[in-house]
Image 1 (spheres, rainbow, N blue to C red):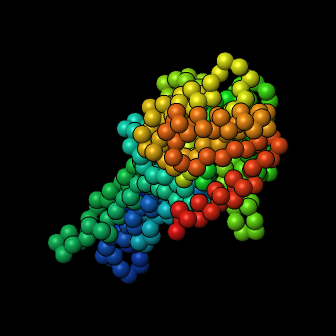
Image 2 (cartoon, helix red, strand yellow):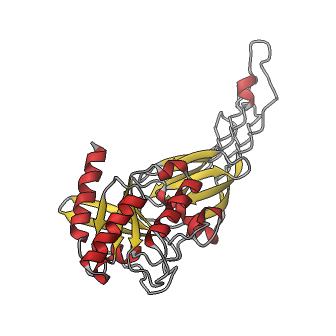
Image 3 (cartoon, rainbow, N blue to C red):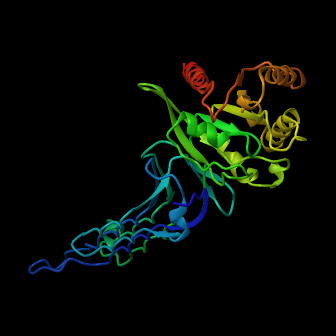
Length: 338
C-alpha cells in the first residue's frame, strides 16, 4: 500500500432531534397535561488509533465522515433515539489539526486511544419541560442544536525508538535490512527510499526496538529541497538518532566530513529540539577501505566535528559491527526508560 502521511478530511456530527409538543389524551382524563418528550442527541465523530494501520492512504478516497442525527421526541414522554456515533480508524502517531485555525486538537499515539473531533448536537426539549404551576398547558418546544462540522488535517509521524539520518546512499536502508526483517528497496543510486520504512530489531528474546529509515537528506532539505522536508518530521518522536556517514562515497570528490556538517545544518534549521536529540555517528561501508584509511577518517571526524559522543565503525552490507551496535542501542534505550 502506498505510504501517505498527510490527509484532509471533513467530519460532521449529527444534529439533535427536535422536542415534541404533545398532550395526553385518554378516556375519562379530560386534562391530561403535556407529555411531549425530548429529542435525541446527535451522534459524535471520534478518531481511534489502530496499531494495525500504518498509512493515511484510505483518506485519499473517503474524505467525509458524518454521524447520525438524533430522532425527534414523541408523545407519552418518549425521548427520541440518539444518533449513532462514527469511529474513524487512524494510524498510531496521528496528529489532528483544525485546518482553519491550525490548532492542535490531539495526538493519538497509543492503540485504541480515542479523540472526539465533532460533538453531536443537543436534543430539543419537549413541552413537558416547560410545565409550571402557572403554565400547565405549555405549547412550546425547542428544536435540537446543530452538530459540529470541521475540516481536519491529519499528519502521521511514524513511531520509532531509533531514527536513521544521512545523505542519500549512506546505507540507511541496508542497515535496517541487516538488523531487522524489514526489506526496503536498496540500489546504487540516490533517493532509492521514497517513504519511511520501519523495522523491529530483536536483540534477544523480549528485547527489541523499532528503527525508522527515512529518505535521504540533501543540502537545503529544511527549505524543501529533495524529499527531506516532508519526512524530517518523522524523526521528531524518536529517542535516539543514528547519523550514518558513507566513508566511501561513489563520487571521489565528496568529503564525508563536509556531508556530515550539511546534515547537522539541516537539522538545526528544521528543529532546534531535534538537533539536540541524542545522536550517534555511524561510519558505514568500512569494508571498502583499509584499516589505516578508516582510522584516519575516524580521527578526522572526531577532530573536525568536535565529536564527543558514541562513534561506531560498521559495514551494513557485510554485517560487520551491526550486532554490537544493535546491542548497545538496546542497552541505551532501556537506560532512557529507567
